[in-house]
Length: 207
Image 1 (tube, rainbow, N blue to C red):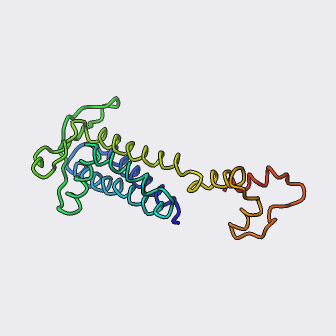
Image 2 (tube, one colour):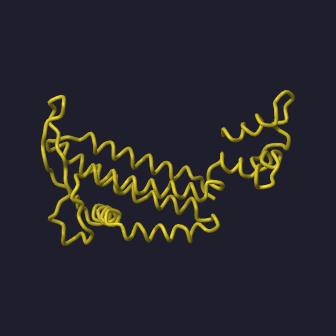
Image 3 (cartoon, rainbow, N blue to C red):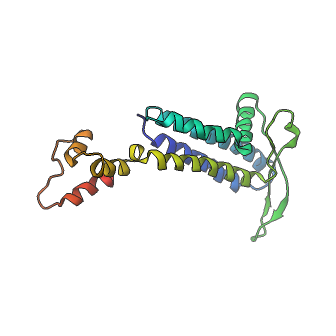
């Protein structure tokens, strides 16, 4: 079983490029930067589900659970659109982005809302979002975060160390010494004079 950290890393990568998109404003160079950040964001966001499958592939019942959630993504217009955006960017080289409404913020700095390009309607079959790019990216990211959250709710006792240790001791019939041995430690490693049993358990819950 791979560490679930690979999923968390991809979430962090996606969030990084989303923040870059939010901070771009206007001007030729910044517009080009937004296009590049959008490409990186769509690629990183797509890889969240790849990493999730890689981390969870050996977990019993995951495939059946994931298939149901994968079908929901396939039926979601926004998820389908961003999949096509990623494919166009990586496999063709298109950046489906255009400039939009320009305005000044509270500091009198020029800003611009970017929108998705409708000139690529022949290339993209999914409905093109009407929202500005940042809003649409936020919604898509939240959609993927909800998927990961549902995975944690379903399989937390297996993938989350804190839940795993607590469940193994409270309901799984394992002793604290069994957990120590699982981690490659000598049995009784935490059995130190003056440390109560509850605090010994907390050592593992805080890892």
